[in-house]
Image 1 (cartoon, rainbow, N blue to C red):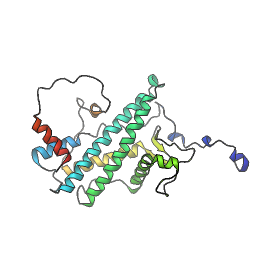
Image 2: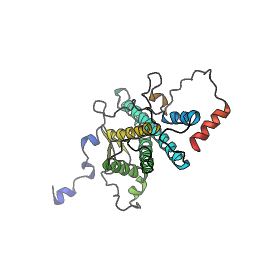
Image 3: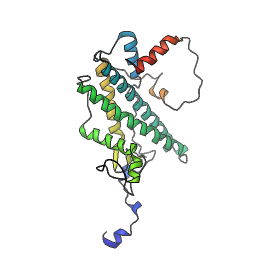
Image 4: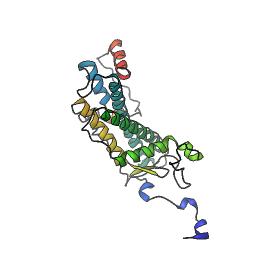
Length: 262
């Protein structure tokens, strides 16, 4: 189509590929992360409180702080992904097909997941540059690029909508592009940037394996009695059973200090 005929075509007809638009129960391909424990920070807290630093971590305040943040961000990414997936499964369920709330919450959780994963990847790279966690799997340059581009598009969407972004090499959103994170069957899209769920899970998996490399022991698979989904940000409203074990105020404060200080 050329010339005057092309100019008459509405901009909304220029749609991306179907797998970047369609979202339905039958074709949703969003891998679960139940095999990846999001208790990494709890394990590291036990390491430091009861037995000292993890095996692969030197007694260096900077590196300890970097590793602690890295583990927390990896756990956060896994929890946010799990929450996003749970909400999206509700949204595509035939019983809830008229409800938009789960979809909106899924976007919120996915934005948090992408941001946390990107930060975790940057921390993992900094650790490797300091000879910590070397030998663990790393993201390819292409994987890092796609994650970074999508994260930046989310974080700077206001600049791209207004057309006054600071980084001129990063294009503004085209009229046919989604200006908010759009979740589809196999991937998420914003602007011209696409990230598949498999790519995101791969990045989180490599961060999880880096934690195991530094600690020197496998984290283990979540048990049926305490799966990752129990740590979702959406609370069921059930009243927890009282525990016969009560931590002292000293131990509770010590744990808080271990999380944030060296």
